[in-house]
Length: 138
Image (cartoon, rainbow, N blue to C red):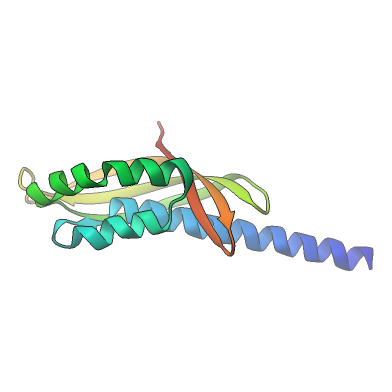
């Protein structure tokens, strides 16, 4: 019985880690894949994966961000290169994600590649993992 409980707990931890990492990868991708022609749904996708301070901050900045992205005709296509959890439990996690994003705009119509390194803190809300803090690192 004790062995079965330990196996179940290990499976729960593995499932939580996998779900948190998937959510972190998706939020990083959502943030770095933007099309100025459909900016409202792109911004909403980021907000749908956000909570707490990150959500409040992103909501506050969305109007200005929308204006800048639209005026500059920004199209960004992100691709996650690496992602890993550096800490996790059943309710919270911290992930590091590296994303390459090809960004085209009025100033760079041919596009240029940017590499972003992000640290995301995630919280479990119901069955979903949401980003509560996101910062660009090193």
